[in-house]
Image (cartoon, rainbow, N blue to C red):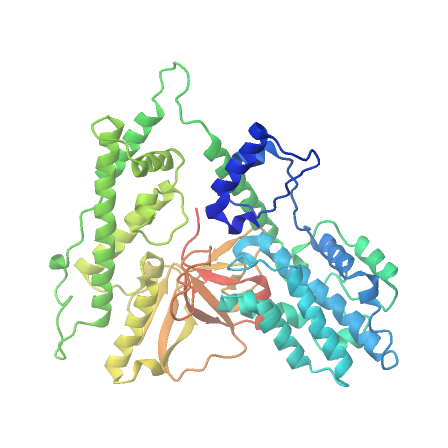
Length: 549
């Protein structure tokens, strides 16, 4: 576990170097080292040693075979001596289901944010612990306590690793398939997926079980995870993106031959000059429209005016940073100032069409490439400048906000002050309107706000049936119509609706804040559907504020 002793890696390197200069007393001496992938591990030690890499099994088939190879035949037959055939049947049926569950939670990771918001390191210790719990319940209870078994396995054995609420919901929905109740044990026709390929086989010996695993498909269809075929496209795009980023990282930074074209530095200078020319002016509340930022009788401004001021301050800070860094970069390219590490990183980012780290540190979350990022940035400035100078819009472009959570609170506070209601008793009801763009909105709603610009990932909104439907083939995201966020006191969401999480970006993961929620997460939006909500949970359906292109 060398990765746990980072501070000692320098000493290790000196010890290994001494072997080649001073030698060792015993010619049979060998030094074995183990480590997780770590940048702190000495390169010289790697170069001088024989390297063995252990990769976890990939695919459901390899995962299941690996699990039962670890358990062995003795564990498979460990409940034969029981109350007739009862213990043996419960044990064998459910331990296969548990192994499928273990394989699914591991293999979902390859789909990135569609699989899990956060990549959890589920490993063999999880299934060994869950297996012992299962055996205890099988042997000690006449009637299987399904609720207790599901809770301990889902919330404790596996859920102890899960820190995101949406991931926990997904984990429990997956487990429900494999610990569904007596039907899993008593019905040999029960299948874990619609294809019928994956199931707990009829009782048999260890050899027959392994034969069943051997004939499973080498390549997994997303349906075994409850996902759409489009998930494969997402996986392939992620793999391609990783390869492209690796190639860019290895690409030399020197110019080409003696042609008449411009050098990379000259191209970056031209790009920076264009950005500098297009840079907007700082926003100023002094240019606000009549009635904006007025202090009310209670001594406070309107809630949404306060939100606007906060957003303007954040954008002004970003504009200042961008202007300063662009000037410094152009000077550095011309040799007028020293090229610092930050400026050199900025230069490379421009060459690779990536947003510089100097900007992302003070910017909003966004995964777009540089060219698209600049257009998106200018659109945001235009939206807030118009709000300030023209007046409150009839429809709000939610993706434009730095901090959408604050805007949501501002909208609730506006309603609470209007009707003298406690704000903590208010929640949003969501109504999908027959309006596609902000231009289609003639008047703002009497209560609440209209929101535009949301995208639906891993599903689509059927505008005829007014229901959530499965995605079209090859359609990764679909634009939602205008949504009415209407505050209602003591609102209880319809249990039949799917509570779709709304994220700033489709990376979905973020930093956990003091409320236990991800900073990327905004709120849940109730969407009508004919399917059970768990269908969309497994599909990883969510709303996001922007696409990545």
